[in-house]
Image (cartoon, rainbow over all chains, first blue to last red):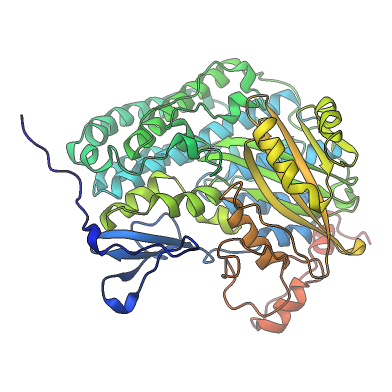
Length: 396
Length: 176
């Protein structure tokens, strides 16, 4: 039997000792350690954030996440905007999957203002959210493969993502920021012939995913570099606020679509995808299978959705729209985990406070800083991508 | 939720319960009882997930509202704990030992609202804003417009409009 060499054998004799307060005693002047910045602009970084690595040889002994490159002050900005003026800016908080911002914001405003969105609009909202999820997973697969040198996967997934962007364009008029789900309902119904074209796109996605499976998931290099790496202990899930595929890969079926169903998810037939090994490979595989679930969900939605009926509820004159004092929290399951909006109103025409809870806020900060210890420098990019983080959610 | 509130009310001096939905309620807690209540909710009542920790600035009342939102996944319910603290010299005890992720929220709150959390890891470090010298920017008395006018030069030929007035003119031209 062939004896396989372990991934990486660190030289622990040079490791820093811990100080009384738990921090590491790193003496940079000793020459044993090196500070290395990964980011803010780096091919192995998910968006503009940086990780300040302290390395000992090739191994990371400490990592600190630094953000601040994308801060645009959305939450403060919204305090100066009327409720309807906030609607076109919320989507800009998250580029690859902007629709959750629109849905959570719209649902929060509706709840505090006592508005019920029409049933048909709820179906279209669900359709859009699932389309966005597919886009986000496709980008992720390209990034995850790219972090390990499999550049072709990114080209394939970008191609099918582009087809999905075409469907977005014909449905909403825009490719990236759709500004379609507004408080009260949605802007429009489905265009003629949309179902057939969507079916064609879904088939193309399925075909591509088969290739992705063969080339990426059955690839010896990909397996060797991801299986058993950066395991999230299931015991850490609650204390580190881990949600979404990162939690499901650890065997916990955390999925807001099932735990606290919203929109029309109770009427759809699906099971949360879970994995068990909680390593980078499992997280990638959970996302790949979840993508196929979304493909199925879109088919179910198009099959079951009502084709007539109102798309917008009656909303007050948006220029004089005042919402009584109150607070609420609306959550949804985005491709990365729990996405939520905490909205506080004070009876005026402006939100008192909007707080956006993005899953990256916990995944890219506390969790990443914990997982990054003892990782080889070459695997840092792979680990970061495997947590599927988007820095704009942290900074807003 | 009402039943939970009654049960907790026997142990802690809680304020009125605001039931926003059947599975979401908010309740006020005195500052000194927060930590014990959080521990009780986490270990005895199944609220193991800290969803978010944020602040609301009630400038007129001279208070900050800290909101600790906890989720109980098994029973699909959420509870928001409201803690009112004075705006002047705002300080709150840290809960990073209960949830390590709270340290990130507390760092942000210190930077954006100026609320101190003594003992929280790296709480003094800059989080998003580097070298910020003004008052914490998410406070209500921080004027973003004034800051922009004072710190950035206007591009020649650029027009600025008050968003509300501009939108009104776009939608209803000719009306006052």
